[in-house]
Image 1 (cartoon, rainbow, N blue to C red):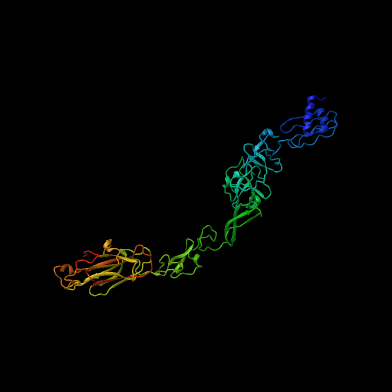
Image 2 (cartoon, rainbow, N blue to C red):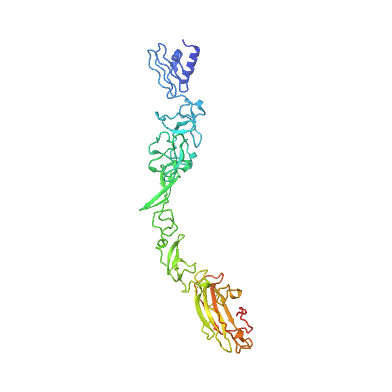
Length: 502
């Protein structure tokens, strides 16, 4: 006969499972067990007609054995609180004693089972590494393809935030235990996954546990499907024409489930526009002249691509694109004098000579075809022996342009390349003459100053023509006229502003 303690225990148990008419069996011989994996069912009732109490299903209680001469034992029970994937606080609330943190983005403690190669994880779970417990069956919360920027954005331990070959990021569940993934996905190493290159979102390096890192990704190098959850995610898109492919960006429209708005341009031959027309990663990298072939050819020159704009790149010999503010369509309208280059004193162009034997002038013409252009010239002067007079008088002035505000010159008397002083720099005209006497120009008679006044004063000259500081550049021609006879001296022994020159 059952004791009172046994009956009370049976009542408590039977009441918990609402066993009803099973009380008699419980009282007869309950045989209630207790273990972390679920107690065994009651033993057979003596000479009874029924089996013991049914055990829980799964990790719950096992069914009771059949009574002697009785019917079979009870079926599995409905499960005990704290079974697989139930929320938990610690191991004491789990039937199998394993409460594990399986959340990565937010905390998610669940009762879990360890992974077993001989037995698949329960439905709606998969195997992932959860430190420090090891490989356990974690909940499948649809984490594959969730948008992310780093591993911590993904919900379940073992998830990696990978970059697809189309450059969109997604959560990739752990498959390092057995290499198993669901349909439409494959288990790959993040270190060799195209697009990820071992770096996106913390991927790469060793595995999460003792095995090498492996994660589930869409098969065939594809992006994750555009869904409502991935609304706004961007990925690379392409347009191809012949052998040329252009890349751009398109965006997932979650409402329509479509990737939309591809920004890739249609591939074309490179032209001069600052864009990468042939999509090789470099803008305007074609032949600089060929890229401007569609533009009208300018006069006396060629258009070339400069910083995304067709501009005059080269001029035909003897021509210049000046002033520089001229539009490219004008080309090279400014003629360059044949005396170029003559930008230095040492390279001065020999212009000829003048003499006081007659009044024939020496004319020099040219153009300054760059902002810093300088034209140097040299010429000789002859002071003839006029016996009783000396009309040697060097005079230099601009005759073109008519109202000159653009040009000036420096002068060196004596032929050397010395630096002109202030009296010989930035001039619009120049005079050098011998003194006169008795109010006459030159010398009617050579008096006490005869050795000076009536001697030979012929010298070589060098002259540099430049543009005045601040004057706007033009392609206007300048002309200098040089004479060696005549002119007005001041009869005081000097010609302003050149003082006492020999």
